[in-house]
Image (cartoon, rainbow, N blue to C red; front, side):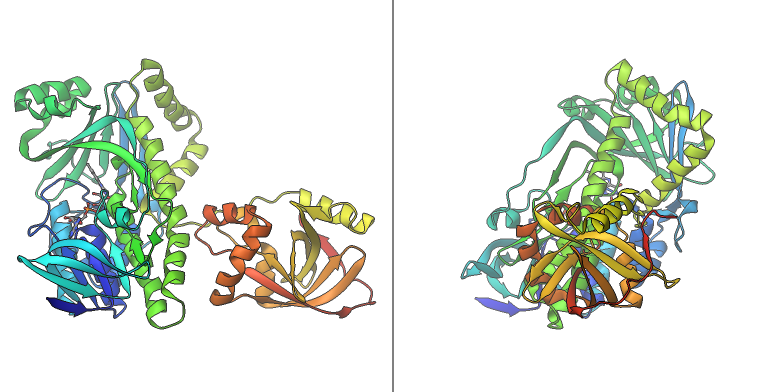
Length: 553
Ligand SMILES: Cc1cc2nc3c(=O)[nH]c(=O)nc-3n(C[C@H](O)[C@H](O)[C@H](O)COP(=O)(O)OP(=O)(O)OC[C@H]3O[C@@H](n4cnc5c(N)ncnc54)[C@H](O)[C@@H]3O)c2cc1C
């Protein structure tokens, strides 16, 4: 039996697997990719690459090939109500990026381009065949057995990536159990010629209707992809309709859809709409990405983009592991920490979007339409804010959400001081200290924080309630590590240092045992919540510096 040794085995060669091969090649990491299909899929499943994905493809040197293949730009989303007119216009032009638009290309071309790019890099060997089993040693996967052109081979690598889709066999083999939640509707997807009125600055157009929305996505060669929401389980009868009967149904949803010509039956497909998010992305030495890790409602149009962005993050973390800066398990956990909240956000937003598109009762249909129409027509400033934020979200480019300023820390600081820690000295079964750090204007900034004594050091965590932005005191530490701690009636100088990756990995479970809320904060943000070690100096008798509490004028 032939054996191959490589750095990363990728099972699955669609968007997730192809992207990972490109991302690894970019990092100089070798891979063997196994794909059981000899030809790319001809299903219409995802044609739009969002701005964040375009930034990544540019980094990999793949963007120009994408453009040369005929990808066309699309600048956002427009949503129309049959009686209220245009309810929503999301313009990606407001997003600050080199590519403030989507690039749309048929799904199969995207898969081909990714695999071609990976193959040409010289870092990826593509094998067409079925990955049949994992090779285990002491409970950890160390390789994959596969059947290639009728022969059995064994491939060994320190990293095995499962990019084998929503029904992932690898996920099952490593014991990660998932639950799919089905929506009440299916999606009929087919292609047609772009109607004459679909011109100008191209955007995805959504036509709302109580029976289910129709979505037109512009494609190259003057084509459109039509996605139609239909009641769950009725897919078969829609597939069997003649073009005439189908057009009749489309006109019922919106008369303008009657202008669709050349509806193609080839590639027509009915998709069961569902969502799933695996509880964890890695186990037993196997790491998951793409649909193997999460499935989202197609209304968000982002499943493929999530797969590509997973690959980008995972490859960067694996590069650290191959350079011996972190262990492979640490790299998997860093990848999960960074991607999990982002992917959950996409799943939640796609669900929100699906509720606009599927409104089976008249009440829901009008209620949801009015919730868009009222700010659109009556509150233009608020509307601009909402659509700008939606544009950033749709672009996939993270904008840090600033933490809300609360007046309570100032009050707690005052009470803590007055009572010498008898009030406010404990919270969530852990002691509280006051931390004073030096601001840019040299004034001191004081906040109450939970602390965790460990040996002769005190640990604090820059959680900021799980905001994407680190707290002000943490930013102050970047300038000056000298701080003052107030515990009860004592004040002490201390030196603050941030735990490095290895120490963070060691301390984090210990901290979670003491305060589980930290884990909930971490799940809210892709930012790693830094752990800070405070090394105290001898107690000082000096006069206290001037304190400025958060929220104080
Ligand atoms: C109707 C519809 C519309 C969509 N629209 C969009 C959109 O506009 N934008 C967007 O970003 N996303 C969209 N998506 C989602 C997107 O298609 C998927 O999220 C994405 O393609 C998933 O890619 P993947 O590589 O993870 O999985 P898959 O595409 O399922 O690929 C898995 C691959 O693994 C291979 N494989 C499986 N088992 C083995 C094995 N044992 N050995 C070897 N190979 C194996 C399979 O052959 C397959 O090629 C849409 C999805 C649907 C259903």
